[in-house]
Every structure is written in C-alpha cells, then in structure tokens.
Length: 92
Image (spheres, rainbow, N blue to C red):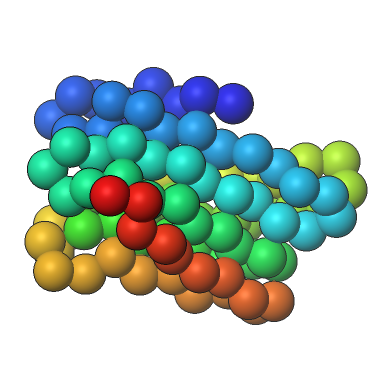
C-alpha cells in the first residue's frame, strides 16, 4: 500500500506491506537522506530523520493499525523500536 505524504516531508514514495502474522515492512524513497527499508514486528514505531513517526498500534493476521504523526526533525537519526524485533536498512 502506497501512503501519500505531504511533499514537505521529502518522501515521494512511502510504501507499507503487511506480512502476517505480525510484521509491517516499510519501503521509503527520500532523496535528501537516501532510500531505506525498515520493519516492525509486533507493536512499536519507526521514527524517520525527516520528521515522520509511524506507530504500529496493533498487528495480527488480518492487518495492522498504524498511526502517523509529525516528530521533530533529527537529520542524524532514524530509529526503530518493536516488541518482537525491528530494523532499518539504508538502500542508498
């Protein structure tokens, strides 16, 4: 699922993929910071350097409930935290 974000966040492509039973994957194009992929297993969050935080509120076999919010920009740090594991990989 492609998520449309306000252009001010600098992410022309933000895609989310639900992988049953409890994983949400992110594929993100962000020209100013380089592309990235990330994942959250269980509940948790992905906070991006360019000012977006995605919280996985609930996830199960049928799908996920996500919350998007602005966060303070922190150009040096992308972060992930998850109850069952998570990660971030730079793709360029």
